[in-house]
Image (cartoon, rainbow, N blue to C red; front, top):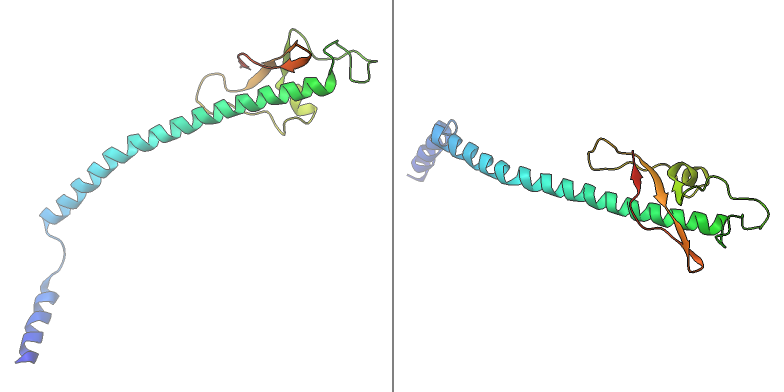
Length: 142
């Protein structure tokens, strides 16, 4: 008797050949709903991360410009730290990214992460006030 029940159950399990059309459609609909929710959420995360990366890059550039000018012209008088030679390359209150790369303050010129027509940082504003260098304002991008 037990053997007969086992054989019957085995035959029933053996006859199931796959999913019904309704089950398959239900799975497809569920996957579609999940995709419709996930794609915009992931897109927002990527956009925010690029914006945050650009903000941090600009802070880094301001810091590098201040460190460069503090090392090159600590007194803000247009002379090198040794007091003998005029500072070259500093014009109209801005330091170029190329100067910072050449001087070793940046490993390479950073690129803007958010998609715009201009994606290369070019110059950073610096000023000498109250006996120290500061860098604030908008960084030029081209």
